[in-house]
Figure 1 (cartoon, rainbow, N blue to C red):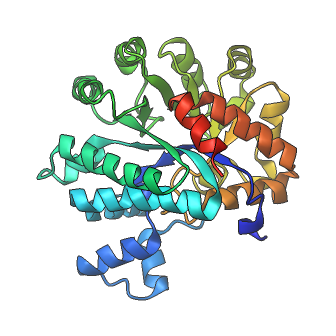
Figure 2 (figure 1 turned 90 degrees about the vertical axis):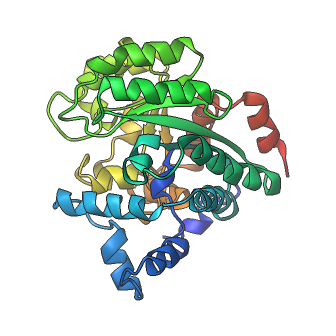
Amino acid sequence: MNEHAAYADLKKVELHCHLELAFRPSTLKHWALQAGLQVESDADFARHFLIREPMSDLPTVLRKFLDVRDLLASEEMLEQLAFEVCEDMHVHHGVRVLELRYAPSFLLDKHTHLNADRLQAAILRGCARAEALYPLATGLICILQRTHTAEENARWLDFALTHRDGFVGVDLADNEVDCEPEPFIPLFQRAKASGFGITIHAGEPAVPGISRNIITAIEGMGADRIGHGVQAIHDPEAIRLLADRGIPLELCPTSNRLTQAVPSLDEYPLLKLRDAGVKVTVNTDDPGIMDTNLSREYALMVEHLGVTRADLEQFNAWAQAASFIDHEKIERAMAAD
């Protein structure tokens, strides 16, 4: 599979990428060595930070997420991280439209010495540096965490509203199985009324009945898009609602395989959902820690599902239309040579 040759000329759109877990491996390794971690060899680095096989030991997986987070200890690191994610997406994978999402609470729960306002400014500087060098339109999404209370998340929504010029949307993420979405409905109604784009992680894990979260996200929270939503394939009502309202799914094939949301990529429901009338898009989710990239995701869909260039062009068209980034900014990035 030559992933870098997979439609390299296609101007791509990435809607679902978590900034904190989208690191350039060489940079993270440098930071880890500076912090005194024993990750000199590629094998040690992979064992410490990468997820390459389906997750069976969830505490170990969570530890890897936290180990990455724990290294992101300064504004300078976050600025570099943001710049490198943007640069790698564009230079190596032809991305022209890139939405990055992050949870300020996730970073600041560990790094209490950091200031949220300055952290946001650093991330925006990194994105702006990339936009100055490349034909690329970027936008940030503020994540509210299900594992925090509604009161705590209200403060982070206030933060997003204070930085309205720096965020294009708001997301709800984290433990979907144990944390019901209903307490957060008023927050997302408020975010929607403020003009934010709304995307909700919903219907991701392979748990019976979890697809109901897709319906709640759309009908209660005003979702414009659904993050993952792969379990909609088992729920005719969810499929009908997605199709009737034209709400796209932000599908992340490698991530869904690694989290065992799907049994295998050969059974990935991308085309079945498309054939049922649902708009689908292909994304990376956590490309650093999951050792993937958008070119690879496309190549995997070609290899396992027989996806065609025309299919990928359609998925990108849906993604571009659904982006929360200013559409004039998108058009300029897409039109550039």
